[in-house]
Image (cartoon, rainbow, N blue to C red):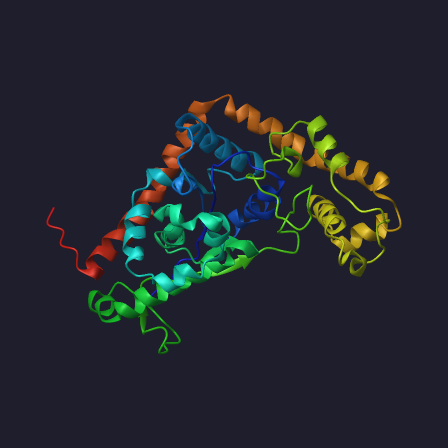
Length: 359
């Protein structure tokens, strides 16, 4: 039997402006993957409604904006499949099946639900509670083998692996009977002889993955932060970028000469990390150049670098957003390509679990 075809899947929610953290922590890391294996990059608009329904016009606009950001950052629709999740019904169909595979105890352990629901979890939507199952469906509808994730999503990918393992075990005999599985080279009590779903591997990005708030170095940069000064949006112009970096929180000490000196200095660590990620250097390299200098000297250098790196992408996003028909055509073509992969997977899953299809 053949092995699982290597395939990358990832996505971003269209909720608010994409920011520097989304770009450095995710999208910029996807670009080189396009030349390594088949890649699918989704605008996960079904996830965008779990915490409440946004304004319909704003959701549609944000979906196009994320698509434009993907392409402006270097995601090529000729190399990768780009589409919005809600256009491919297999995502939600498989999510319902996974709702019946996953256990309540597994979802109760998901820390992101606790963080997002807070003290008001009794009023949180069922969708917010169960959205890790939809995330698993997003990945496994394509039998994706690799998912680039940051630390905050690693727990969800572990849940995806748990769901895949349970499905493979629960239906091991049926998968073998139908002869639609992939032979497992190392069968064990945890994983049977034949697998239908792969045990998807995380692709953990490097140390610059977690970009923190410009106003609080202990909190992740977020679209939901009420202060726009906490983040650099990909739509910000040069003046806005410079202003936000100038106002970024720091401490009174000079930059250290070695990375060990960043310990206990979250804001300094964050700004050095941003410079390193934008320049393609390491934090150690940055500190070799700027160690011993005050932030009054470092911030202008960081502003110049950020503007130089981000302004061309911002300009390209604006150009793309001026041609909505082009974006819609790319999403339509991408959805057709995605459906061509996911539809046979769901056909197999229906057979495996015994759904009767007499059409």
